[in-house]
Image (cartoon, rainbow, N blue to C red):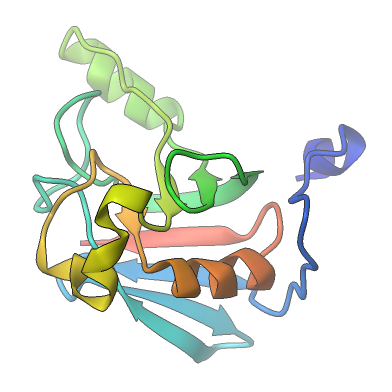
Length: 158
């Protein structure tokens, strides 16, 4: 986290309130929660990878990783409406994929909708359409974008 501050890697183009100290994803319930001081301050329905059950094993498996990660970089020029990168893979993820003879992959994000599916709006969560990312509506992405800061933990539960 200190490295992020030293190198000036921080969200650009928005005012960060930083009032959220943790993000929790409940995959089975298809919910992302923003937590502040132990209280859920926002809860959003999410879409997941095309294979939503189980932990991500390797690049291309269509699964969303499970475990504790951090939000580490912001991308305003994403193919999707804003994206925040999750620190996947960690060392254990890399080692698990290596044992399978595969790459762990990366580029797992919390993001909004792409312009071609923006019309799905609040119904986007009815489909498992990402490659392993966590998707919310564009309006919800604005709330997340403005509420978290670099280094915010994100716990992704089954």
